[in-house]
Image (cartoon, rainbow, N blue to C red; front, side, top):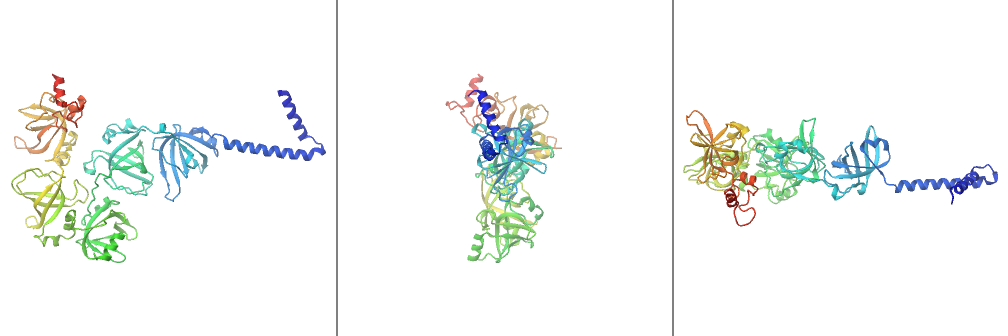
Length: 588
């Protein structure tokens, strides 16, 4: 139809609707009503089928009360932010122009932090705040290609240059410094490179958002993934992680601390942790309590299994070791061991090997009064004890490394001994308890023993200095440096410095052959402290020293890393020729 004809038809219709002829006025009203309904239906249909516009965060105020889409990077989210039971997730989206909060009701599965997502929702402004309000599982979209590329690195790598990883999604593995509650929606913690805080070289601050759903014990080995950011307020770097995405290594054995009756001021350090404690247990239908040697008590919240065991055979006024989670009780205004939050069994038989040190703490008089009884003890060596033919005084502790309130007991180790008792090494020994009149203390006499796995060598740093090194005395250590023959003896020098320690070489040391000499290497040996030649000072030496050779192929680990072979395989390319032989042939 020609354009002029169409215009004439529309003009004729409008003339009929708008004329003042009384005979057609009723018809005009019906036509106008039908036209209005058609227009409303058309607008509703358009609003339903139209695709929401993708906008930038900085444009939100221009689209108030409209349904829009925002595309950006998911940098944080928290489930049920107020712990009120709402089926809701609050997510933070950053599109480069700004940051917006998306309140997502009846949400679907959340993607990993760092994923590029598209969120659809109503723009809500209230009381000066603005957010996206989304509903249903389809409100947030992403594809496989939108997932972040995650770089797995060591905490030490971040420590050397944190700015290089700023704003990136990284993956770290380490040991969590405190117990994390299952329902905590916002938690601050530290991730270390060693289970013991005192032995940890680096600590990465974590900001954990969203409830985990289960307890994570302190010193657990975990893998976390998140975005590294700088906290200007606290002047520190932090890794923003999501609680449900934390992976716990269940093969790592968590050390359960033993509470000390005489160190009540340190109990708060173990708040939230699973602990053990030994004392005289009192039971009743309502309250259970554990009493120490001085009359101090701590409340016990038994599990149903404990109550059933009590009903079968009374444990009232018996010596028991209780295991549970240390929590503060508002009702009792004191600390309680909650067996319902701990592992099973909740009450441990104190005659098992791990309980003897705890029994000594709970009932020292009763133990000394029976010196003929032999006990089996599982403990750890506090300080290294060298081989010898004579009896040697030593100390046993209840943890492999220092923890606040750890229990120490003096022991006499029999001779002859052909192997070192290493610091932190597990030892299972048959012992008897005696009173030492000379030192006025309890002493354990060791009759025989079995040693556990030798602990890994401790890494020393030149910057730590002599005082810090003294804590590693008589231990196996690792130290970087270059070996030089100086003043009729071999010494290990710090790179670019005159600082050095004496090397007492292993009989078949490879560190001074032509392939390792004049290169900075990682050396292994036992750190000893001896008198200087003039007898006026103490100096450090590295005994039985040689370059670190993990696979035993007579190529140091440092050298293998530099030439491209594996320090953990004698034959890296599986061609039947050892890495050492291939390197020697290549040099000749």
